[in-house]
Image (cartoon, rainbow, N blue to C red; front, side):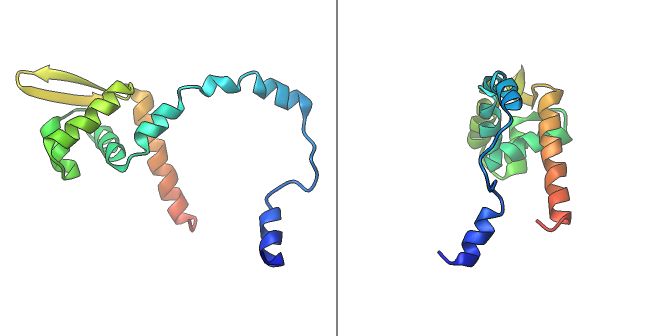
Length: 128
């Protein structure tokens, strides 16, 4: 490894090992509260499911056939992804005769997707 690369890598770490015991203790006591939250991000980390969730931020409710056409997939594929979103607590469905309609579970999911979209757009503007 070249010395230039080592220098660049070391610029983003502390030069000495020291920590704030009060902060660490306070945060460590709460850190396990994130347990299970990773599943939300895991579900949304799939590009197809994120597209579906985004589509559901643009339209309050969509039928499976609409979703399939929006993402350019079969109804079976759309149903699979919608079912996963539902099982993860991110979407809900209702049947109307032979039609199945999906919507986001609540406004928190809508906000997560919307904030991620805003963040990405701002990152592009800032040279990322």
